[in-house]
Image 1 (cartoon, rainbow, N blue to C red):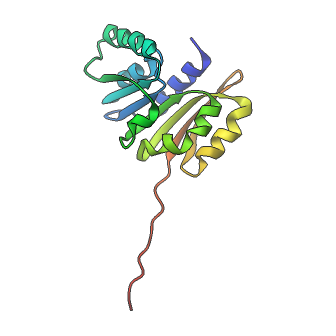
Image 2 (image 1 turned 180 degrees about the horizontal axis):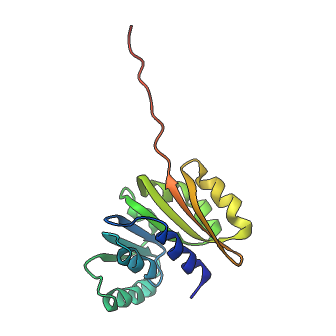
Image 3 (image 1 turned 135 degrees about the horizontal axis):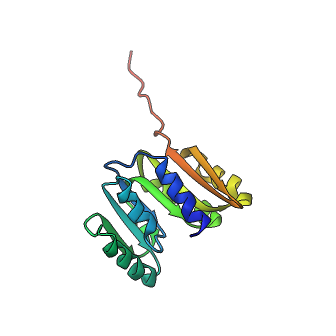
Length: 165
């Protein structure tokens, strides 16, 4: 029912999730992990520090008959490294997204996408700046004071080897 969840769902709908693996960081109720597979994702993994949230999310996963495609874990986002997914969705706070930008971007497979929400209008510039070196904005949604972004991971810089003459 919250604007940030609606923006995350809209952001996911901007992407072709068919056959993609998705991480849902700070999964909470699990609604985004569930939606990702319902929108065509191959598998999704939701992680949250709150074990009560994980228990509630598991109930939702069971009721939506996606237990074979949605995995939930209690723990920290940093525990996912060195795993990657083609799509990473994070409905956190703008400050948390900014602080964790370098970690979150390592979880995205090359050429993959991020969906970031939980960003208040006044936090958008800081969040965008934190991710700009790693990804470019491909979609932006607004609902009242909230902003949602979908970003595409930038290709790694190519290095050229000098050839002897």
